[in-house]
Every structure is written in structure tokens, then in C-alpha cells.
Length: 271
Image (cartoon, rainbow, N blue to C red):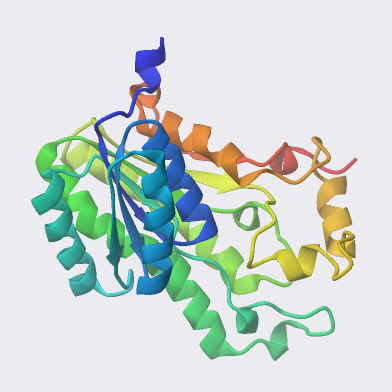
């Protein structure tokens, strides 16, 4: 039974791998025996994360890359292939919001800056699409592979104050379904494309809106907890099992789905 979930020896590429979400997923894959290529936008961040990840004893390499630059992605692809000869797993964890893309409590939709909206849409949507095109082509040639994109609760619920992020993640889910059928129909049924939709985890990007300076929960946090049947925020490590499952043979007949990892948030009306 354990062999069903085995990803040991597989080569994984993790975009956004120097961030909180991506580095956590990278660590989980390393501990499961995969070889991991960590992609990040800032060389100093990549170096620090890779140094920490090497303490797991696994094979890991860091690459500085702009996920919105196809040439930059192709360069990393070539380096990964030169090092390990294949790409079995792609996790698209690059994304997130920016201050200008999040409305304050006193703002409304007409206060939104279009240029910031476009940046958020570009990073979260094209920052997923472009790596799928570059590394997915390797999988098409191999006739095997697993892609895991990262969606959000903002894709399935109309969550206030994050319009651009919500739109982009909704598009990521649609693209996941489209890419899944494209790869299976035209290349191989052994290439699967799925997504995870994390619930609410406290990280650097959302800490200010979820936690007050004194450590207490904000009003927004209390609303989140009230709509989460488990009555707590998630621990970032709780995403790792879902990712490993989707990348393993245990999910061999699963493609085109988005798996919520949310403590029940998406299934609960609040009543």
C-alpha cells in the first residue's frame, strides 16, 4: 500500500519554491525521496531556502528564474534536464497578492488600481500557465508526469477585498481542467494535471489582515474561523500529503480536479 504513494527518485520542479508555500512543499517532497529543483525570483531567497532544505539530506538545487519569462524558464528546464535527465513533477506555487491588489476595508472596487490588478492576474495566471507550457513539454515527450497547480478558496467563494487574486485563481482552476484533457487526449493518459485549493493558513502575505499587532485575531480571521468546521487555521505542512498523493500512483486515475485542503471551509455555508 505504501508503494502507491511513493514518489522517491522522481524529479520535481517547484516554482515559487523560495516562498513559504513552495519551500514547505519542496521540503515535503524531499522528505518523501524526490529530487527537487527550487525555482525562485530572488537569488538570496533561493540560496537561503536551498541551504535549509539540504539539511533534509535529499537532492535539491536552486534556480533563480522569472516565471513570467519563457526564456528564463527554458534555461532552467535545460539545466534540470542536464542534472537529472527528466521532469516527473511540476508544482506551481508561484503566485500571491500585492498590497495594491488588495482593497482596504474603506475602499471599494472603483478604487482598485488597474495596473496592480494586471500584475496580480499576470503573476497568478500566467505564472502558472508558462511553467506548464515549458515543463509540460518535457512530460509530453516522456509520456508521463504530474502537474499540481495552486488555486485558492478565493476561486470558489466570493471573498471580499481580493478581486484580482480571486479572478486569477478561478482561471487557474479552469486552465487546470483544460490542460488535463489536453495532455491526456493528445500525449498520454499517464500525464495528469490537478490543483490544490488551500484554505486559510497564516503566512507573510496575509498575516497583517488575519492577526492584530497584539497577536489576537482580526475581525476577518474570526469570520474565517466561523466558516471553517474544524474551527482553526491550517498548518502549512498539512498541504504536503495532498501534493504527494496527487503526484503518486495512488492518484493514477485522477486528473483535472481541484482538491480543497481547507478544514471544510468550501463545504460549509456557515449555517
